[in-house]
Amino acid sequence: MSLVPEQVTKATSAPSRQSLRGLDWFIFFLADVQTGFGPFIAVYLTTQKWTQVEIGFVLSIGGIVGLIGQMPGGAIIDAARSERLVASLAVATIGVCALGYAIWPIFPVVVAAATLHATASCVLGPAIAAISLGLVGPRAIGERLGRNARFASLGNGSAAALMGACGYFLSSRSVFVVTALLAIPTMLALGRIREREIDVAQAHGAVVRDVADVSTTSVWSLLRRRPLLIFAGSVLLLQLANAAMLPLMAGVVTTRSSQWAPVLIAFCIIVPQAIVALGAPWVGRMAQRWGRRPFLLAGFGALAIRGLLFAVVTDPYLLVAAQIFDGITAAVFAVMIPLIVADVAFGSGHFNMAQGIVGTATGIGASLSTVLAGYAADRLGTNIAFMGLAGVAATGLAMILLVMPETRRGAR
Picture 1 (tube, helix red, strand yellow):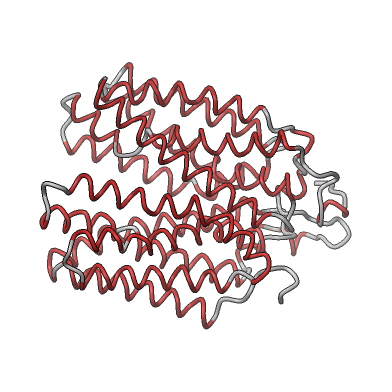
Picture 2 (spheres, rainbow, N blue to C red; picture 1 turned 135 degrees about the vertical axis):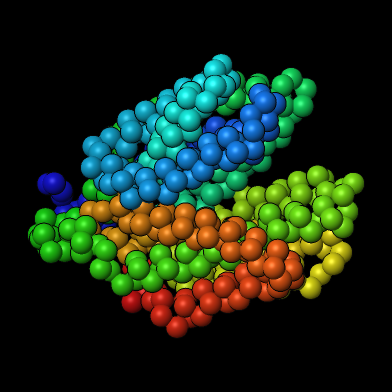
């Protein structure tokens, strides 16, 4: 791939307000679209007389495809000449999948839709990060990623309210009709991003012809980058500690306050989303000044404290208040994961492949978390399970403190 050396440090010109706003609204509406494929699938298929085994099989297919597709998805974005084109095809595919759920909720169609949705989602995360990096460059990427997290959080919250209302006042089927319709403004927002303003070299991790050779830009070389492997391991620990906390806590709240459980769980979801929307841009901006490690330590520390509070607090309302720490962790890692990947993959030309590596670690950690925490809760009790999850978070904290280097360019 022939790249211009000057493209490594900055784009040829500052991105226009139109492109930046287009990216904002693309992320917002894409979060809306993706929200429709969350818990609403289980609710909808239950109303269609599906058994829990069949529903679990469909959800498992999506999870497995999403896990194994992380690295190939990143590789596709690295190989693409137009991230916008790949993203538009993925959004269109997800819209068609939503219609499939709504119109033909039969087993073959639903399985195909779940598979295609998971496959399309594997390229959308890397595509957003690549477009962001290609637009603003490595020096401004921290604040841009914070802004991305804000609009994703706002999209998730508004979509949950909209789709919950549609499901309540209309039908569970209407959720997927709305999801398909939301693909239209998503595509329109994507079209507002000007292709010529996306620096292809930066979007892929900027390889300089003068210094690049096969040994420094190969995928194998990327896989041997120590900071990337350490960070992937820490993200695995993050998800291992985090993924099971809210489901376990939901069970505890339901047991102690069944009447108010739905409202309390709703607040448990809303509180972290609000903190991400408010705090993520600040995290991205300050990470460019202070470095990445202080925020990683804060994110893991908040997660460990949250686990300890869940283990010792009995009041359901205080448990909801403890979700403030979830918001801190979410605000940190929504920005830090793509930001640190951009740091460690710089110069390789495989930025999006590196995202896939970390995404695979994310999926493995999340999958193991629910299984292991559920087993511990059944055998030893929820308090011990929460203590164990807090211990995993503390291990991640120690990893960052002892072996993770600072990755901010110019800080090493």
